[in-house]
Length: 112
Length: 112
DNA sequence: TCTACATTTGAACAGGTATTCATATGTTGG
DNA sequence: CCAACATATGAATACCTGTTCAAATGTAGA
Image (cartoon, rainbow over all chains, first blue to last red; front, side):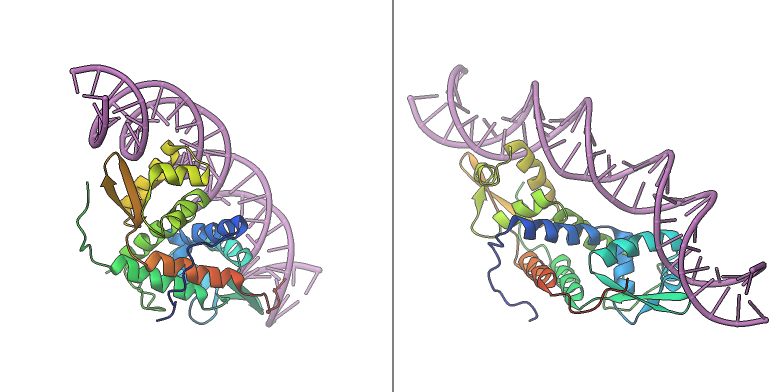
């Protein structure tokens, strides 16, 4: 019961739609989504993200820049290292809802 | 076993992540997102979607095929026309959560 | 300062994808 | 069956983007 069925059917602003699409597009890449998921817990440094996911630091950094610019993640420097974490919990909610969606069994006939 | 279970959140499977990314990628295109939003209400026929959004029927049809294959939308034929509507309410929840996210004011300082 | 470490950045390449146009398929009514 | 309409499909194109590599920037310690 996180998102109440407040009809969001008419979002309205075209600008809002573009913003929404931007966020969704960022989450639409598996590598980037993995990075997001990795950052949902405690702040984690770039090197650890890269090692954990088996990616180069360069690639991780490229993605982190986009995610930070889109305000999905935030960064915090501690000495030589920089820690990334989720900016808020909304992304977690979004992902959670989507997990429910794909977990939905196909109880309707496929009409074609 | 997969590469490394992150277990940061309740999502584990790599396959799940790819499925999630697929859905998010579909929602990551403004045109497609507009089509989805248009279909969140009552079932609407292709021609009306196209007219409502100022797009060609061909383009709308291309997008509808992807959205139907991804089980975001469902189709229902009535005579000559085919009506599309959301397959369930989860997508609406996802969008709703994301709207909340972009509506969040920036009350934290940006680290550079 | 010099060195080693951590992260970022830019360019370049490869693969993906949104759009358009032309054509095909399918449906209803005469 | 034929004509008119509604939607789907395939190919071609132009654009976008994820990845890699090399180099740069920044940081802490000796």
